[in-house]
Each structure stands twice: as C-alpha cells, then as structure tokens.
Length: 349
Picture 1 (tube, rainbow, N blue to C red):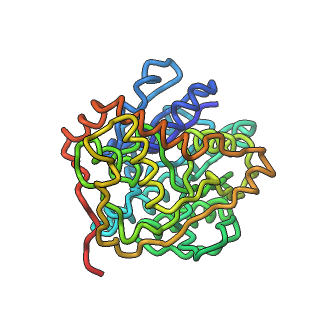
Picture 2 (tube, helix red, strand yellow):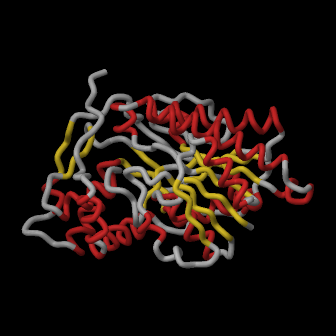
Picture 3 (cartoon, helix red, strand yellow):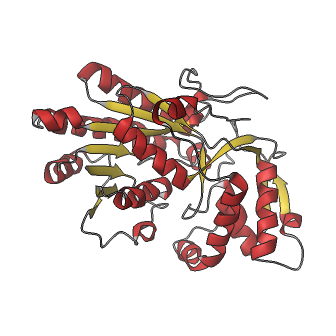
C-alpha cells in the first residue's frame, strides 16, 4: 500500500512514517516543515526506496493536487495540523487556516483523486483523519470520552480540530469518500518538540531551569506512547470500518503534577544534579481555557480490532527521559533554530 502521510515530519506523523516503512508500506511524507517539524525524525528511513518526501502546505490546493497526481496513493493519513494550545491562544487564525481550511483542501484533492481511480483501487482507498480527544471538551472527576461523547471544544485549537472532524464526516456522507477517524489522548515519547509538557520538563531540567507547572497541577491527562499510537493508527487504516470513529487511549491517567514528579525521579537517575530535580518545580499562572481532565475509553478499538496499548506509563516515561538525555544534540539543534521553551498563551481572557 502507498500511503500519503501529511505532517510526517512532526512528532506523531514521523512515528507513523517510521512504523509504516517498517511494516512494508510505501510512504509519501508531505510536510510544510513549519517550526515543529524536523526531518531528523525520519532520517532513519529517508534513504529507503519506499520513502518519498514532498515539502508542501496543505492549504496550497494546486501543489496538493499535483502531489496526488504524481504519487497516486492508495490511502491518506492526515496528521498535518497546528497543535499547541498555547500558540492557538496567541494566534487562533493560524490554527483555523491550517486545521480547518487545510483539511478541506486535502479532502477535495483526495476526492478528485479517488474519483479517478479504477474500480478496484477506488474500493480499497481510505482517508484516515487523525484527531484529538480535546474536541470533546473537559471531564469532571470521573467518566471517560467515548465515540458517542458530544463535541464541546473549549480552545481555539480544539475548536479547529473539531471543525476538521466535522468536515471529514461531511465529505464521507455527502460525497461517499471512504473515511475513518480517530481521536487520541495525549501522546509522549522520543522526538517530541520541546513545547509540550513532558519534553518541556525534561529539557528545562537538563538545562538547570525551573520546571513550570500550570495552575496547581491537578489537571488529569491520559498518556499514550507515540509508538503505541502509530501502531493503532495503521491498524485502523487497514481494518477500521468505513465512516467510523475510534478513540485511542493509553489507559494511563495521571495528574500533571504526578507526571512531572515521575519525570523528576527519572531525571535524578539519568541526569543527577546537586539537588533533586523536583526542587525546581514552579507553579505558574494557568493558561486560559485549560481543560481539567481527559480520559479515553478505547474499548471499541479493542473489541473490533484487538488493539491495546503496550507501553506502561512509568516505563515509557523512563524511556523518554533516557532518550532526551542521550540525544541532547537533537534538542540543541532545535534551540539553534530559536526555540527556548519560552512561555506562550498568556493573552488575557
């Protein structure tokens, strides 16, 4: 199968690219190479004859159509998106452009391509849209998100992803485009750009900086290792029922402060300092619209496709800390591009 993967130089997208190549697929990696993209993430497969790279913006309709015409993929996995909540607070229209308009343009290109395929290839074609659990809003102290949870996004980022989800379903129902959707919980693991919680904690600790925790740190997230996620995404692409949504979770809920404390314990082991890294924890002003709790019930995915996450959270966190310690040069090259873990998203409500 030849898969067109958008956002394949990003954190999750690159994990999917690496896994798809390992599974024997041909891959076309389409990425605009914006600030958080990094071709180093796919360097291990870049020389594989089954791999091709195309630098393109999903909002460039002519360029996207040309890529479809030249590569003629059997499937699309759409991961290209602006994804950082703090940046969405400061620049919401960038998120609407990339996540809503970009998805619509990609859908139209995929539809034109699909309509021109021979019958057998047309029947086998799939458009897999990869989304987030944040479209469902926030949970209280109990309960889980499922595929039936109503949409209730609370931030510009989650609203833009919700809009993209609705567009994908509309193209499926209106035009018959064979679509499948997934909504995942918080990802973590190697190669994550150091603006999200876990790599921020690790990289700032390694540089001797304070470790910021928003609010009181009581927010709860379900954590999913990126390699488990990549496996689930490719399984849904190949075997998921058309028109269906599948929630993908790590079955590993923790309060943010607990995650930070676990990371500090692993940092004490792999990068010991004069004092415990936990002494660097600093509680900072919470961001506007910060959802309290996310938790996913992935029972449908397990029931229909037999998938369960493999990586326990504490082992995954230890592996992630070790990776960042051993790959400080990867982080340094990001710093040289101008990113220094600065705080974003402090616009007043």
